[in-house]
Image (cartoon, rainbow, N blue to C red; front, side):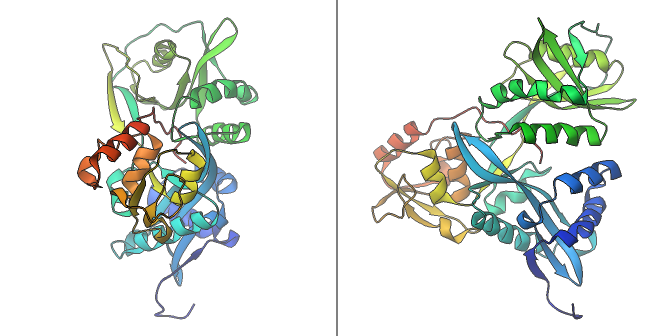
Length: 370
């Protein structure tokens, strides 16, 4: 590329793998073992974009998945690895690649794009608002907890035995990845590539709960905990027994309430989502109400306009006007229209109340980070 050219954004190529890897290491500092695994199994160039000026300065990746939203299977992509070289930040590069990526995903047939950034607010300006919470059970020092005879280490050859429990668990939530067995086993391998381990609570030869965790001499961090209703306490006690004298943290579904004298449970927003294709999402969700609404979207131009419940452009007077990001919070089930009233222009109160009643809240959870 000639010198002094302006930065340009493009879809990634297979040969960009090394540059994406290099930028990931600079920005996130993950281990070589994890990065080697990630870029051998998770790098999908046709779903990723980069900005270059003689070299790649900024990039982001995504991985196609099917998501569950209000019980429907929705095609989308999980965003990850949004990164800009430290020497080239605060130049608006993230905004450029973000808009390019969202429109690319629309072209690929994706309807939504969730992700779990460290700083959620960084994405609000792009219309990516929270759509899920998570509960974090944390302890600064775990005392002695007797190990249950029901806790068992789960080795690689046994991972597939966990999948039925995951499927049962995922069916309860909106916004979650609807993992296939292949997706599930790949995610298990992701954890293991960076030293992750798995333990399960087994009762009467049935797996009642499992946890994938990372452990050092000072910390135990459980990044995925799944259990049948009524078994989270037993699963957590089993993980505590492994963490004697260590700091402890476990990510859990947001509706849980667990009480331990040496640990605190805190709920936090964890996960945002962007809207790639409003029309197709409305069709997929099979909405039924007789009114139109107006949407504003500064990222994906085709999402702008007045729509009916089937996602078709409408000439009817809109009942309300809302941003694409806030509408998506409602469609996923994380917020109601009434809860977002301050962000909405309402033109017909009675009809607004009808639509609000038609779109109740759901249990929302995003267990995956990428």
